[in-house]
Length: 293
Length: 211
Image (cartoon, rainbow over all chains, first blue to last red; front, side, top):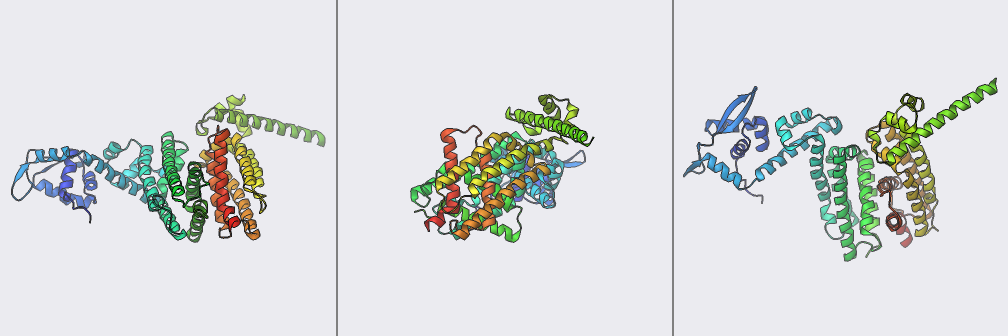
């Protein structure tokens, strides 16, 4: 059962406007996790109730909160809106973090949609990106310094997702069968394919951008550490061959996986990708489990 | 007269070769001192080689052509070192494999800076990418033949898909070898080579030997 939502769309929109006086409709749409046309009537309601004021700046509409107005919080009573909002913010600065998360999710979606339309990350301009994501320049730059920083932020989440996609296999005991290993690797491949634009850009930009390179190597290190832990645990439990040096083997397997996914699996089509997946499964199986225990 | 013309032509080619060699050596020196290939300018390369900047274009069309030329030697050396692996068969032991792979790793090491520059440039330049892919395709084809021969003769796991497994192992060793710390020595190098040996042995040969 998922947690009940504590705030309505109206509440989310109000918080968004209260936190950043002068925001536009695009930011509000991010906050309510919906489109701009869907966010407009919500803001209209808030304006009609007197909670929010509308003004026009340089041709664009912006919104601010009327903090001294009394807001009804229940059928029985009301409270000064300013006091209500400040107690909400005092309850946690996580609103900013949540919002950042939402902005990043939007940017990731925009990058991946533009890639499907044939634009690589290297060619993308910030202008193109924010217009696709429906964000203002100021929102973009309040969360991200530049494209390189954006890539690093997006890649951190994507790689984490990639590692997690196979987590129930390598965080756990031995795979019961080769079929189970095959399924885990298939999930990894499909996560990779979904995010290949980000992962590919990470590898490419690592060649020329020192910040990205550092990030890339750090993420590869994290991934290798997980494999090494799986090998060491497996050796203790007796399902991985004791002849393997956990750290050095993990390093080879990790780079092999990274290269293979990007150079072999991603460019392959249909049946050829299936064969690459089969060969990958046999490779992992023979290396780690075959003849062990 | 024909003799003279031929001699004159040979001399010009010799001069070209000499100029190219000087630029290649200059590039390798600059890269070894920690400069990145993408940041190297033609002027810097020419100055290091002791030739006027405009002469650069007599020897190479551009920086990428120079890099492709630098990559010829490592490609050939690696190909040659790899034959020690392709030649292994059912009588070969794990130590034979270790020796062959050690030779391969040690062949890469002197070429480390050039190969790193090639890997970096391959992300942005199609001709460099082609040169790299051509080398990898050659290695993959040889390894595939090796696997197929082993499967016919019964010393490679018969379940493996030859072409795809060869591709995985080739690309895996590409990055694995290139990512080696260039200054790894003694026990550290032994450890890396041992892990590589175990890696290849268990994937290709062990299932056929034990079963």
